[in-house]
Amino acid sequence: MKIAERYQLDPEETLENIRYARGYTVEHLIALLNFAAAMMMESPHSLLIIDSIMAVFRNDYTGRG
Figure 1: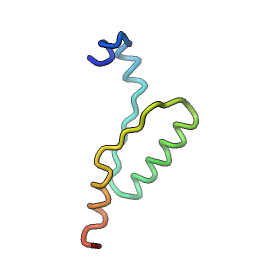
Figure 2 (figure 1 turned 180 degrees about the vertical axis):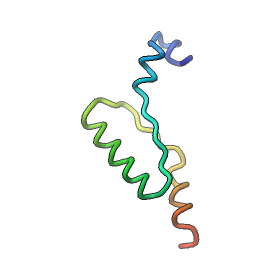
Figure 3 (figure 1 turned 90 degrees about the horizontal axis):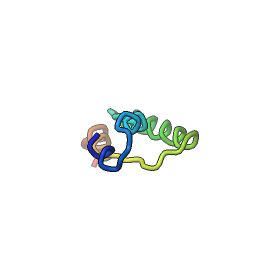
Figure 4 (figure 1 turned 30 degrees about the vertical axis):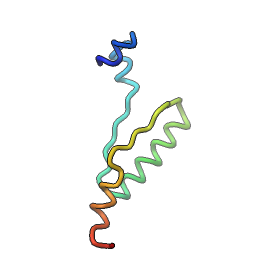
């Protein structure tokens, strides 16, 4: 909210424009990415951030070296 206020944006409106999802498995992450791609085609989104994308792969594919 502080960032929105710093740029003279309405904090509530800014928060309404933020989407958040967490992928728990590789399959779930891929489904979320497909959903995000479809969402970005329907309405303008400017930024996609993926934090720790390798974590689900490490978890799902442990020991496959």
